[in-house]
Image (tube, rainbow, N blue to C red; front, side, top):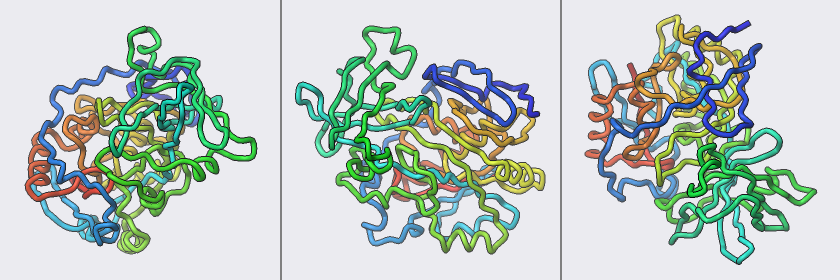
Length: 391
């Protein structure tokens, strides 16, 4: 039986419904550390570098987005194209992907007073409850709606409704003056429809103000998505194509899956990620351990993969299979134990994910690479370009 001596990755920073399961062991949960913005990379991101449409709309194939390759050991930076990814990996390396599929998680809703809103489904909790965010129209996009109250119900299309029960964050439950962005809620759907069917019929992908128009749901899916459940696309893997994955495997580069269902981001406040469901299969855990033992690279495709793997990796660096809920926030002082390379998008100034990148690459390397990305006109966000960080 796996006996966890190090409990710093068993984090419950939100709902009382939290549970964490590693094979053979129930968890002891600890409070999440308060996220500090101090030390996070700060820079000016010109609107012209925010990718406002998919690369396909710019006349590019998925794998024709740009790829910046950087080496931590000497701060070397190479500018390339994503379809050249196999050139920078070698036989025995392991690429770990997140096979969570993106939901049509944005649904129109109406308050009893007639206010038009949008409900964003974030995370499906035990007891068939949901974490939801209320948004209100703001130009071509939306912004948080903070005037709701516990007990309120909102109408959705086809006779469906959502009822708010309690603020998701415990601190907001204790404060009468809290501006609540996330709620624990229940959905009432037409009897003949599942959640997936309802969202397919009446929802659309979540988009923020830098994306000026709606795009079909297919643009928000990776080619290897298997299990719907993410409120927002695990976008670091968007540029993969079946042909590119085949090329990697043919070169002796292994590809292993896991699942982490992403919740809604907070571009307004850059809050740390909330609790999210994950599943690391035994086969993937074994491949991670074997790869590291052989001195090869474990390449996490996105911050979601890093979060899942680090949750089930103990202080000695052994990765275990497991599933449950993780509230792990990775910072430089903790470091990384499973992952030594990463494929990621470019993150906004002061974004909480930059702390994870700093834990992998260090502040100096991030400053150098982000200066390069800005100077070379790389594109940010889920439809933008990518960054491969290697040892």
